[in-house]
Image (tube, rainbow over all chains, first blue to last red; front, side, top):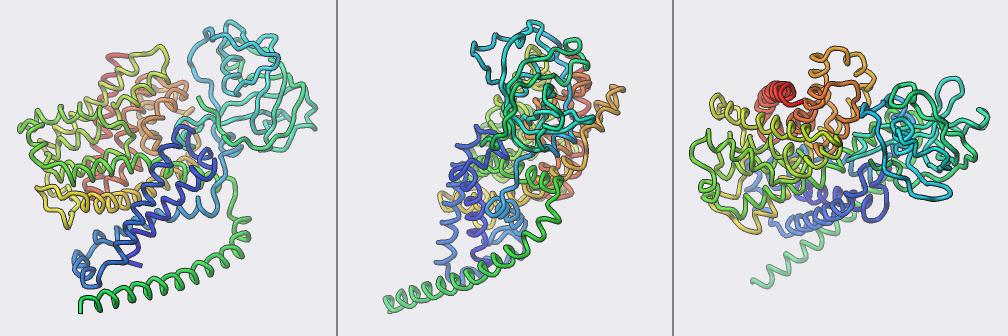
Amino acid sequence: MRRYGSAVLLLLTGGAVLRISLFSDLYLRYVQAALRPYLVISGSLLMLLGAVAAIRGMSHRDHEEEEEEEDGHSHGSHGPRIAWLLTLPALALLLFPPPALGSYSAGREQAQLAAQGVGTFPALPAAKVLDISVAQYSSRAVYDTGHSLKGRTVRMTGFVTHGSNGTWYVTRLVVTCCAADATTSKVEIRGTESDDAPQTDTWVTVTGTWLPKGKLGTDGAWPPLLDAKTVTQVKEPADPYEKR
Amino acid sequence: MQNERTVVDGLRLAVRAMVYAVLGGAALIAIATVVSVLGPMLAIDLYTPPVAAWWTVFTAVAVQGVPFLLLGTVVSAAIGAFVPERVFTRLLPRNQALAVPIAGAAGVVLPGCECASVPVASSLMRRGVAPAAALAFLLSAPAINPVVLVATSIAFPGQPKMVLGRLVASLATAVVMGWLWARFGREEWLRLPKRTRTTASSPAGMKAFVAGLQHDFLHAGGFLVLGAAAAATFNIAVPRSILDIFTGSSWLSLLLLALLAVVLCVCSEADAFVAASLSGFSPAAKLAFMVVGPMVDLKLIALQAGTFGRSFALRFSSTTWLVAVTSSTLVGWWLL
């Protein structure tokens, strides 16, 4: 194992990276979409390095190996010992890819009102039903002095979280770089019977209109409301997070 | 005689490959059986939402770090294998006090997050660059490169002073730390990684490049995983609502965000967005979060401990933290 340690580790890591970036969309659960080409390149490079290490390990004569073990600690040709930690994320990704963050993370991180002050927003595209992100809807609902959401029918997708007193929200996490920096945005859904509220963590697409609430730019305006016309269950989208 | 030898060698190789394949295959089958039987039973009990979130954040930090770490190790292995020592002695002034700010400003050229800079700094030291200058580069590179500055300006629209403040405070911290090291640093705190085959002064070409790349990536990768585990643990264990308690006092909140930057380990290209979303904090506190984050965090401490030794990492990180907090306080008070 000593001789092939480096090779095994490099192949495992490279394989795990390629599995989530090249052979599936799983990488979107962990990092932003723009990282994909770099992940594919890294994965391929690691596989290549692993192959080189394996070939070298096989053609090594035994006496050469002994010479290199003199060093005693973890800097020989078999690679440093700490590197075995790489097997943890690699095997997790290969065998049981961890799920995307959901209601648990959204719930423990109190979504906050970013104090950026009110202002006007660029005009929304004309459409009968406007597809909008949860984050975009929230910031327009809370900060837009031009009231660009007024009279528009909007459609948004997110997962369900529940508040107290039977309120429920369409929630979406916003990821900038990787899942460690996820922030929450959510919209309270009105206009449905509370019994109809779907289970926590089910994905839904909601169509409806804006219900103004509170004074713009204050805590009273938050979380924003949506008067729902239809609520349909959908499959979890390939990219579970919203881009900023 | 020669021919016989190669035939015997070839045979031996084939037999060895087969033995490994059989043993490895058997082991894999055994593991797969055990996992598939025990896995679901354990999974139901242990896979609670916090544990699932921990795994997600853990793998996310590791996956996100891999390309940057690889970039860093490619650059560092290339420096080790292809760039002769005299290039650096010619580029950098002999005088350390002068070399430090130049190396700090050179951090602009490495567009990556903090994972990339540790291996590069270590290979610079091995190539004969003064540790003080290499450390200034290590600190400034992840904080002031163009990608990070653009991200900061997007996160704080209409506040160019935030970008300027970040640039000034980060560069000041890096340069001050370099000078501090030049003045007070001791060689024995710094355990430079020994490289066996390559001799110190002459570049050794392709073979050394590949060997260096394999070794550096595996070594730093192990520490990246360690750091990712620590980051995920804090990410799950420390609720963000704890922040609301401290928003009252501007001093406490600055210190708190500077500590938060250490435990959250948000990559330097994303930390501006996290800082922007921390409402209720003073601009100086947000600045401290963005200045400390790329220079001191758990992931970096783990990487530095692996590369330069534990005693170095602890001393260096704690001093850097103090200098970074001081410089962002001063810059925040002056600019923001």
